[in-house]
Figure (cartoon, one colour):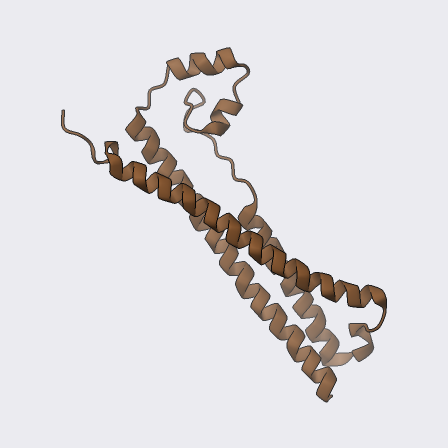
Length: 168
C-alpha cells in the first residue's frame, strides 16, 4: 500500500512548527498586554491622583481622550482574546484526538477503553491536529493585529488630545 502524503515526516514537521507558532503568538500577545497595561496604568494613576482629568478640558479634547480610552480598552480585550485558551470538540464523542478529549473521560479506565477503540490512525490524527492548531494560530494573530491597530489608534487619539491641551 503506498504511503499517504500525511503519513510522512512532512506533517510531523508542520505540526511541530504549528505548535511552536502557538507559543510565539501567545508570547506576542503577552507583550502587547504588558505594554498596554503599563500605558493604561499610567493614565489611571494620573486620574486617581487627581492632578488632571479629561473632563476639565471639555469639548474636543475630552472627546478625544474618552474615545482614545475606549479604543485602548478594545485593544486590551483583543490582546486578551489572543491568549484565551481554546477548546474544541472531536467529531465523534468516542474519538480521542487531543488532550481535551482525554480530560473529558470519566476515569483512567474509561480513557484506556476509548483509546482501545480508536478508528483514526496516526496520520489522520496528525492531519486533524494540524488543521485545528493552524486555525487557532490564525485566530490568535487576527486578535493580535486588531489589538495593535486599536492600540495605535487609541494612542494617536490621546496624543492629539494632549497636543490640543498644550497648544489650545
